[in-house]
Image 1: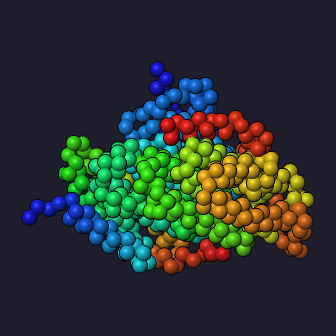
Image 2 (image 1 turned 135 degrees about the horizontal axis):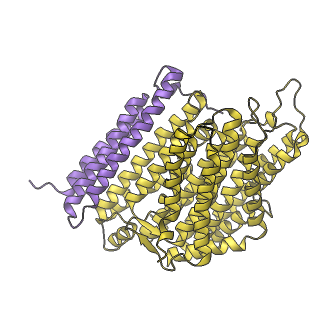
Length: 492
Length: 102
């Protein structure tokens, strides 16, 4: 009876993508593709949100064929992914026009890629995991290479493509080994097979390869090499999309695989399972990401390293799942939502502060912008404070819930939480440094000044993201409640 | 001699390892693309062989069709990026990609 809700968000995106491909070819005047795209994404996200809130969402996990789940977690990630993608599209609407890259492919690729991300977040089978992952990634590779005359963009795309496909192949080989060990490709079947005594060597090798493949996608150290290059090379709206939607979807499937397929005592053992390995990756990502971000000159590169550090914080929550289950999962979900709006706000105001030929990319470009153009600098300050975890912003509660879950897990996890807090103190240094440069430094003589662009799209995107950051920071309870419901349904 | 699942998996692992090592030591993007194809095809060997030992459904064979289709799509995007790179640099060696450093 409510089965239309199970496919509506996906159908909207595909329909929107096909419509835009036609509209781009046949329309006589330049159509407002950014509006169409962001409306499709916005409606799709709102449908999922409405289903979550109104109780149309299935109370027990349902399945759309045996490959895709229809549960509250899928709907929650619809909201996160659609928010991230819609904000990137709105930013692109202003950016592409200002810088003269206005081509319809951008919106089509974003829609199809967001579709792949939503399939990925729903996948309950290694097959749909692989297909969703590739649908998402292939779109993003093309988005990075969008400025095909720019050597930096193509170089970033090349590095991202090569390492991304290498990681996908590793993940795929792990999937084949798990299939060989258990005879199943769905996560629940794999769990049954492991419980029934599948060859532990094959299971362990398969699990290792699948986890390595997924850590590539969430850009955790030591599989992060592509991140700064791809983020810097891509246009800023594409960077926004990569850093929020792609990362959220990868973490969604990460949670599903770990909880459903590898939730047995052997895989979760503290001696030889995934918790100690992922804890090490989390620690490395937090420390390396934050320290490497300090020495960057380019703001996008700094934000790339900061996104590696954020992947580390989220991984802390993922590891805590083996002890506290739904509390940790809900913390991860909330964190991803908070990170999505905060990062979109920071990158979006970076777009706003530059115009054609005068883009704001380095610290030097931002000298004194805060004093010359306070309204353009304000969203950046809020976004950066939220990324830093400053109360009362979204980022504060994201970090609070994740570290709280880690502390509740006890044992070595307390140390991990402590390391997280200490490394975010390092993070505070480089985040605050941007604000200092913007408000307290004067531009050097003869320097080309960054001039803010004028665009209704960018202003709309920043208003939405800014409101969301403050809303999540002042009243986190409402969304946290949705995250808790989704988490309880996953572990039940 | 009866060939068991172990032998097939060993073959797949050797092929996968060859592809992975080739990907890591070669600098030519086209060769690296071929290495990725080799890795994906080794997965197909493992999937199809495994399906023989779990005959109650066709999960492995279906999976391998999807792998083939996705590999083709991936090659299309990859070659497009190679061409874009070649136009700018007049080479396909990855060690020429050295603009993005900090």
